[in-house]
Image (cartoon, each protein chain N blue to C red):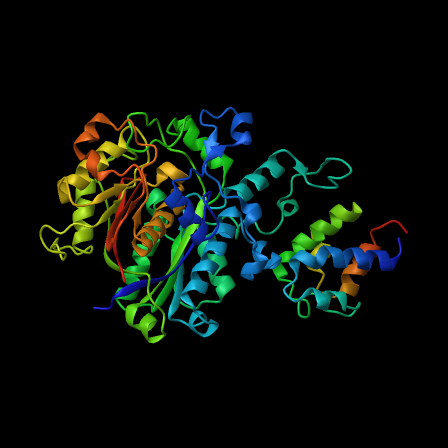
Length: 86
Length: 427
């Protein structure tokens, strides 16, 4: 799967969880902090992971979610890329 | 003593998701309950219910975002929509909301049961909505797969908590629950908080979700009507279950006047107490009379009637559930306190059923509306009247009555033998 597809899919997933306006998501780059810049609440990380698992039919270990210290589009996309078929 | 005013109202109900539509439907005597397909499918004895049409609530127009809604079951969604209506009517700017003088007290009867049920089903059935488009996938049971909002969406204080987070209030943020007295109970508590100087303004009321699982519990008790909400009639055979929300903004009267806001009504008396009969559900005339006398004494232990001997309200808004045991006892309690003439009785559950945790506040809002617009909600479904109520048939209007009405007494009774009443006066 292409990285651009993963990022587009991830942006789609983030929409209902945004605290910031949709325009900030549209303008987001890989370096955008999902929590600080897009206003996603920490309690929703679990829900975003769940949506990712549904969308790409993959599964994360709890430890992998705990390890998401830096919560950027890049860090989440990296994690997804490590799970989806090459 | 500080006087307390009602300066904003908001409603979500089967008769409308805004006060104007609700008011219009009350005046026209429309019925809000209808047949619910799920009740039919699940073999309910009562296949009717009074649920709001949520598809007609424009949360975005209320400034409620998808992120705000993540922590809400339907009960908190209704409460938020009603609260925004009330706050807008009250004209409260952020500076008055976001300070320690503004609180929230919104309770519910059964809380966010849909979310809890959802989690329980997912765990016990070993199913999750996982790749649903493609297939059901059997998972090992794992709480994480049901999402992270099961607690904030289902806790007993979910309505108050979601409202405090939404408005960013800094004062009291609590939820009282007293079954079908919840709506008035939270408003009464807020009234006392302001009257005694703890808060200047409180967003308060009650809500209930459109929960088939909770309705099933009432259906199992065989207290729901299979036919309709025939309050005061000899045909009454149970109540019609429902959901919705009623939220008001209370404020120190002087504070509202200083802001240039015209209050809708002023609270003149409030009381809450229990029958003490040792029975969970049966109404007691002794307890109801004590409740009415308690309201006339504004809840004070001295039991002095502050309204004066012989005073009576223009309108008594009955709890009037349409259960076989309830209505006659209630009317006789009222007549014992106010005599057999000189006021109107109305039982609005005949129109929109029993909204449980929301019923007291939604019906208080209906009373504010009656005083504001000068009418009495018609008792559309009370004939043939229960023979035991024939002696006060003249107090029970079948069609809308117009007039200059200044005061109303609102009664709400709940499981646990809890009784609450409030007297309001048009400002």
